[in-house]
Amino acid sequence: MAISRRRFLEFLSASLVVAPGVARALAGLSVLGGGEALAQSYDVLRQAPANVGPVIADPSQALNVFDFEPAAKQALPPAHYGYLATGIDGDATLRANREGFDKYRIRVRRLIDARRIDTSVTIFGETWASPIALAPVSSQGAFHPDAEAAVARAAKARGHQMILSTVGSTSIEEVIKERGAPVWFMLYPTDDWMVTEALVRRAEKAGAPAIVLTVDRQGGRNTETRFRERRLDTRTCTDCHTPGFKNEVSRKPMFDNLDVSTVTNLYGTGMDWGYVKRLRGLVRGRLVVKAS
Ligand SMILES: Cc1cc2nc3c(=O)[nH]c(=O)nc-3n(C[C@H](O)[C@H](O)[C@H](O)COP(=O)(O)O)c2cc1C
Image (cartoon, rainbow, N blue to C red; front, side, top):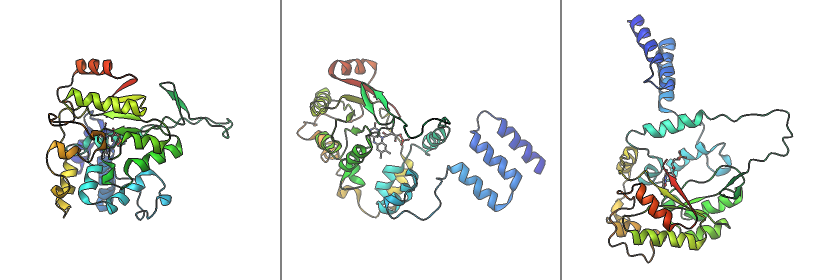
């Protein structure tokens, strides 16, 4: 049996269909054996975060961004944590993203004057302190009352560009005020052109130099981790989240004073390249197409 298992694992290690991390984990099982090896290998399979210490009690204790994840889980209601943490289906792409990110290496140069390091980049004629910008994250009021305003202050402190979501909990005018400089606006186009146009015009009037069209929500999504966490929540979701599109966006200030009576979805399910062309005709500044 041991020989067959070794052969099977050798086959898997060489197989193109098994991700390298999984193959390594399985190979580890054959070499080490026993409960400890099994536990370690499962950690590899699960892409366990690096942190193993106690949950941080204050942001200043965080050694890296992943230290915030257990703190968020502890602090947030399960349904809101699930919304933040979920991937799609069984989270395979979420793990793949993390694994892909691990493969980036910083190219180290030696014997240069390290006192004068310049990480700046120029994007669309604007100089950023570093290539790091804040991706759009919707509904931040679900995580902290200061929502996107606090994030804008953080972006300002470190000179990062920030992209505000259509369904942010804070208006673009307030976010720009807090950041002290224009931010980009991420557009969920809706299926009513009048609404789309109004969203774009408002963002541009506020000063957004770029409109970011998200194109990866067209087909819906199956957020299993979110559904699982929601089951753990003892509160009744509909106490706050009244069903129906109008109610869904009623707490999203970008929709203030807009007639959304004909909108059935945010995500532009019918969008194609013709739509992008039409939008290109509408947007005065830069138009960016985003798919994560
Ligand atoms: C809670 C949450 C809300 C998000 N909301 C939006 C959104 O409104 N619009 C959008 O284009 N992307 C949204 N995203 C996707 C992110 O902008 C980003 O593309 C994705 O999280 C992948 O980047 P990451 O690997 O750094 O998390 C959201 C992600 C999370 C976790």
